[in-house]
Image (cartoon, rainbow, N blue to C red; front, side, top):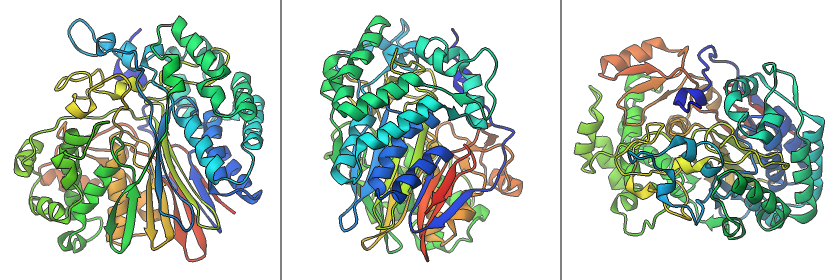
Length: 561
């Protein structure tokens, strides 16, 4: 079957700016799903804390938002228990130890998308289940089994399909139909319509097994057996040692002081360093003096985006970074001053020329996996979780485990397979992210937390592949450096630039055509992306409690109590 990129894409050109979902209370949550947000609030009202609510939300999104919510993928979370410093769980997926680079290459040396992005061979060891059991057991208050049984009932009784999910399911039905279990759960003879229900009794049974037996069932028990039996019959490379040996990496976050606040996020191989570098470049008196929203303001933001992407290919991957000169200098104040001084205020500096000025060569790594989702939780005590997780493209590998009801990631495609060569989706390979057995693929995911002293001021994040660092950089530049209300920033149409290709893309129905014209006059090549950019969900400290904000782009819902 065809695996052109257009086969994975869901056009959204008819969607324009709408109202954000906003809620305020003593504690708050924001996610892509009304039902998942409602469950998280119910957990908080029932005496649970932010860690219980995050646990419930992570598992319930596998029911309510199956294109990205998952137990078969992985990601990163930043959490803070009141009175303690923020910490990171890196639970990114991990390549099979027995896989070889040659397993994924065609005769011409290019990666084969039918193996890297689609089907059983594209599956890496998932981390979601282990990470959230760890988080809840260490910091939660309620019984994990009670939370899972409630979610299992939801899977049995049916999840309401949103209009956005309908469009995705209908567009990707031919690929989902290749897996018997995915076909059973997600493919109908007639197109899906908003308001219909997805019933998933096998997923309910899996959740009930986890409720009884804990995470060990997924990595060493009956669920592990189901995963491996199904994959081995159908050409998968994941083995027993990959599941049994999977470990969550508990890490210190990386951080940057910005305007008297501390911004915390995930270190590489996650994408947080890109966001912090953008802020480090822009945190200058010259940028603060520019009127927010003006063409000059956006010109400087875009140049900072390009610089961060030019650096990305030199360090972003699952590699040792102690001796990486580019990474070591990213967050030094002198580096930010120097890079800001390279911005020509009168014109766009082409990416090749900009790279030469930076003195770093020309990194040409482009976009990678972009079906992620983010949620944010803050409870009344100030405990907080900022989580981004993924299965790579929408519905991951499109392959669901027979009899278990859950989708598996297709994250092999997030690796580079040949330095300097494009993969099927136009990603040019970089050395730090070259595939190796047991390695974790580089990611743009960047869940964020902002603190003032010991208090959490905001937790936020977004899906969107390469648009994650650019969107987060722009949002934080506006709120932290210019004092703009986040509701105003998040409600605007968005742009994106990743250095290569050297084009400034924008959402369809862009709400400020005069801005686009002004940027064209500065020399930018401007193009309509024909799809929405990112999907931000965040919780912010307010004068009385917390303010939750969910994006309109995938019908997100913010709730408070």
